[in-house]
Image (cartoon, rainbow, N blue to C red; front, top):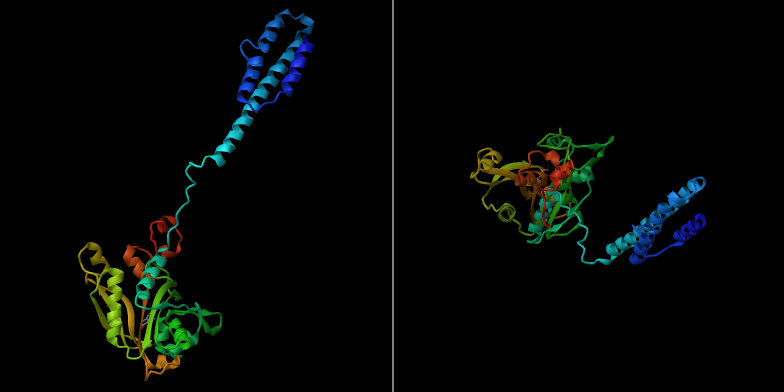
Length: 339
Ligand code: DAH
């Protein structure tokens, strides 16, 4: 009897199939209610006492072997079916791809570029590590000029000729040195100032510089261009130019746009006046043209500069400029734009 069971054991161990029906028949043959094992267990009581131990061991071994075999063959079939569905079911929905969003500074910058490109301005860039000439001297800010103090400059180590640009006006100089009029260019970029970091100001921020140089460019052209810009950018066409001072422009002006006083936010943003200051501008000083190799007797031009961060803060009602550089995804995710 024991020999017969051992033969079955060998048979069980040798069995293999990938066919569900065959495996089920195998299971029924050994493990089914009327299967072989049930018979062997029933036989147990007839086995002489001195053989009971050995007999018990072999039928248990046969039972375990049959169960393991059935389970492992079933598992093998399931696994192969799973891989079939992974590669084979083309109607399965795809893995979702998370959509990124542009940084609010980039959104505003791209809008400004787009608006000016429509009236023939190209985009130019310059280095963030500048020299004294391009950031100051060529812009009519000679050494010891008091206006240099207004721009808390970061100098690189001990060399006062190497600095982090304090404004994008340095790109004006580079552009005029390398291009002949007519010039129509805007220069977006990052600038640095040694200022205490707070909700309102940071030691780095972003500007867009504009420059237009040609024969017969007038202040009226400047005003018209700015009005076009505010209309496109903010949907507001009412602007005013307040006399101001910049070393590189003469005359110079500060540009305010009339935001209105319709909502409580308007009141807060404009401190109750309805007017918002958005940029500085003016006619390029003849000295600056000369410094850059352009004859001020033949050519004239206008320039303007605005802060991108400030505009982004205004447009999106962001309470703290530091949010732009903290990379908090919960903040950044809120800005969706095609540009
Ligand atoms: N560079 C100035 C600043 O950083 C902004 C500016 C004012 C630029 C007048 C100009 C301009 O081109 O004409 O505050």
